[in-house]
Amino acid sequence: MNSQPGLSFEQAPPFHQPLRFFLTAPLFLLVAGVLLAMESGGLNSRWSAGALALTHALTLGFLAMVMLGALMQILPVVAGSTLPASRTVAMVSHAALTLGTTFLMTGFLRSSPVALGSGIVLLLTGFMVFIAAATISLMRVAGSDTVRGMRHALASLALTVLLGGLLALIRAGWENPPMIEGASTAHAGFGLLGWILLLVAGVAYQVVPMFQITPPYPLLLRRWLTGVLFVLLLLRALVPLHAAPAVFVIDACLAAGMLMFAFVTLRLQSQRRRKLPDITLDYWRTGMTSLIACVAVWLPAQCWPAWAKSDARPLLLGVLFLYGFAASVVTGMLYKIVPFLAWFHLQAQHQAKAGTIPNMKQMITERKMRLQFRVHLAALLLLVAAVAWPNVLHIHAGIAVALSSLLLLSNMFAALRLYLKHGGRMS
Amino acid sequence: MSTILDYLGSDHRVCDNLFAASEEAVSKRNWEGASKLFGQFHHAMERHFAMEEQVLFPSFEAKTGNSLGPTRIMRAEHEQMRLLMQEMESAVSSHDGSIFLGMSETLNMLMQQHNLKEENMLYPMSDRALATERETLLRDMDTIDK
Image (cartoon, rainbow over the protein chains, first blue to last red):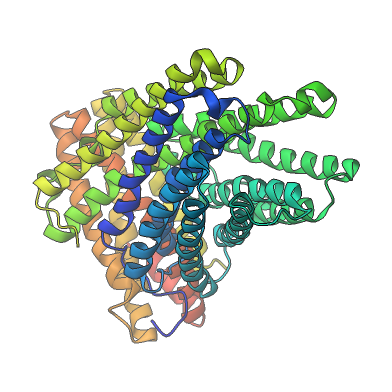
């Protein structure tokens, strides 16, 4: 059977491979919280050094970190295909992403061309290694809706990283080309709506029905959404920014796609068969509501020029999309993946009887997850308020983000402690 | 004519619904209902495993000459699910809701990722590899104790 491409059914990678990504990620959220608490610059203008450092702590250090680790785990399940040389890929991409993000943030904050340059080299290396491995893995399999979503997401990630490299070189002192504004818009577009949203959508097709036992996503949406959004993003990058009507039409279509995904997800979850309280469900609902709020913030700018030009608008969009939508969905996923993997590897290693090892709800208790969720919600609300009053509220928002990340980290360590206590091995 | 994917895939949904119903009964501490619904779920799962382990997997292994690949992993996951269901059964008997719900959360993850692998890969592969004998296989599976 191994001669048939894409059908290897290999078992999941060893626990330490995804876990190192999952345990590193909250540290960047912690750093982001501390930076925000220390100074309000991050919320004054989207172009400030502080805002760029915060954004990349969140997008690279937290979101991409978890998403790469989760992809390694999910690919064998949804596509029947593991990453080639997964051990090396995990090691290189994790180290490069951790160091690269740290250098990049330092480069922004200290205006250091050397740090920026080192950051770019490391991030390009890490992402390209991962993207190459994931591309090989996804080329071997037949294209399901989820696989298509992942391909579009990975293509967007590659474009985001390349454009990001270009932008960082410019910031490091390279000559300023005429297309700079277009490049930064495309970088953000491919990063947020391409890589993050398309990956979440592709994965949602499988995990939303699976976690709560809901009806499947409508066939047409599964088949077309990620492809259409990806083409729209390509068009958006190619259309000159001053061609206002075309830009508006494309943006409106992108917004419609986001709304459709968010509303369909919320509707499916309301039809769920499993009615029990569930932290991941709460996190996903927060995420989808934030996605809808993004459109509500974007829309008035189309007929209200003062809002379109305001510094607060892109920051509010950033907070809602990155912290409200992406970080919520990703944290919700962690609360399913980490306890399950701890249980699964423990059981498989010891052939343990079910009652002799902790089950998922004992790995991380509901009470601890609920507390962390509440702090995350408070942090989200404080971040939104801090966009309006950065000088007053940046300290509160920063502390709340830091506290939420510490609780998340401590919850994952609780699962790891139990895993090790019951004789779980790391390799 | 039904495919293996349709036939066994829709049986997954039957099991899912019984699973959700028994979980709901436990969460409402309706032990009588829970015992009945969990019994039905357990039976449906064992029947599904039997259809696979006694009919589908042996044919698949014979046809592809591979008993160490996907079917081996599917059998191993069946064993993991059986162990969890045993614990859930005793939790129902001893009216221990928190153990039951911890086990059922674990079982749901294991069961759903297992179903994904089957529905995304193993069943379509079987439909291709066993196209000629599919009708007989479906009939054989249908005769397994309901």
